[in-house]
Amino acid sequence: MIRDNLHQQWLDDVDAYLDGRTTPQALQANGQQRAGEVLHYVAQRSAFYADHLRSQAGSPSALPALDGVPFTTKDDLRAVGRAVCSLPFDQIAVYYETTGTTGLPTPCPRAAIDVETSGAYVQKAVADLYQSTFGTTDALTAIMGPSELYAFGDTYGEVCRNLGIPYVRLWPESPRVGLVKAAQLINDLGVRSLICSPAVALALARLYVSQGIDPRATAVGQIMVLGELCTPQMLSNIARVWDAHCTHGLYGSQEAHAVATGCPNGNLHFSETNYLAEILPVPGMGGDIGELCLTMLVPGAKPLIRYRTGDLARLHSAEECGCGNRSRCLRVFGRVSDVMTLAGRQVLPALIESAVLTAAEWVSGYEVRICSASDGSDYVEVSMVAGIGERSLAEVQEQMAGHFGTSVQLQLAQSLDPRTETGAYISWKHARIRDQREPVL
Image (cartoon, rainbow, N blue to C red):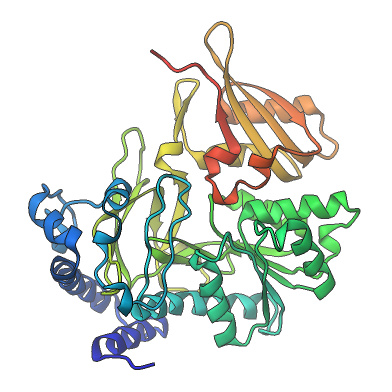
């Protein structure tokens, strides 16, 4: 591949950071400088930003290079389509689209510089994880993404090739493959590592159990999850269901690429050289949790400026993890739009999942319905495919009620409906939560 000087300089800088040769002071200075450079880049190359940066009112920022720069929203991206791109499609490396689960699909082209600078973080994380779990890269891996128009398969396929990890691509939603065929191949081939969403990991486990196969008896020893909300409790739950090490693969999106990558300790570490991050205040949210806002610094096909991700998140120091990664930890708590009021208080999506998972020994699927009683008070109905050990249903209900602050009606089910079973690539809330309360007029 022929790389220009800027492309090569970016790769050298990313490698220097990942190798521990970049000081925090240099990282901060480079970030501010590159923010100015990318603002100039998009103003010159993107029809959308040429107008947006000039005509829209800016917003204050604690980061000097971004102070007074307007936000970019998902609605902006849906409205302008290809006009946000900074390269003609003849000059990109690959074209993807969003899945369109939260609105119209939007184009997500990537230039070679995007692919390589983002992929470097994923490759380093994968190499560390395989050494931690297996002590080798000789572990057949199933890459299980939503579709061919999603970067998921290419990103991990390239990383596996570069690291010498054998792999098979299995699309659980594909009419050619599907979940049943995927499960058969995982077992027949002796797959040792899965890369998939939490929902797919649980759906596979339920399918095996229905076939009389204990997921813990398969060869799977590691599961890297991504694609939807995944709390620490869910990581632990999947690990118990499969008797396998479970951690984050990456956090990111079609739009923003690999924003953070997982580590053996179950944390996500921010891709420090490639972004500037802001945590924007959200009404009712206390402490340091807010909406994650990203400025993409890499001058590629579609850098986004002050992009409001819609995700609730918190950044904290790498020292809180202890895995040795120097990048800050990113904790994601769900979508801002998934925050709801329950019994008069705001409830984070992550709290709902945690309340369900901590009440059982293991859970291979769950669905929560928020309901109104005749007196107008809230109550919660929970259906889950789970094991509760020696505890009674009443004891589990009482524990959940303490978390939710409402009464709880719990049902242990054998299966869930298709929307919940395959909700990984829809949205966590659409798949898991149903607010059946009458809207207030």
